[in-house]
Length: 64
Image (cartoon, rainbow, N blue to C red; front, side, top):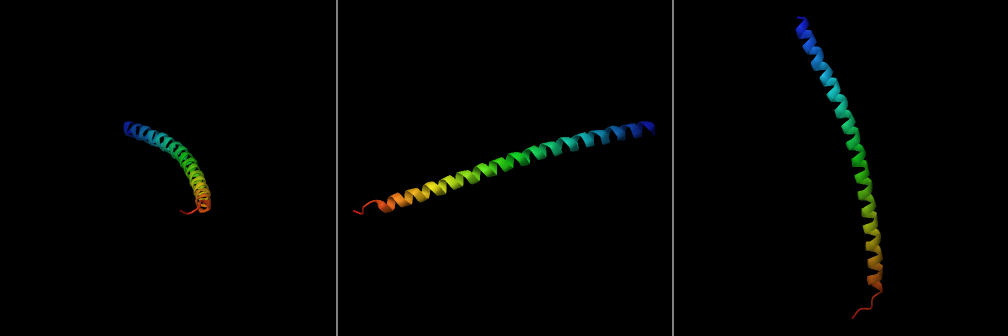
């Protein structure tokens, strides 16, 4: 009976350790995702800005 309890305790300790590790990894991945989304928004903003500037320049070109 004691051996079974010891084995169960060991498995429970492994589960707790794995859960902590996965929580840390999940937190890290969420931070990376936030950074990637922020960079994506910045890129879209730059693209929109460049698009507007190009449209203004094209509007200024004389038509042939």
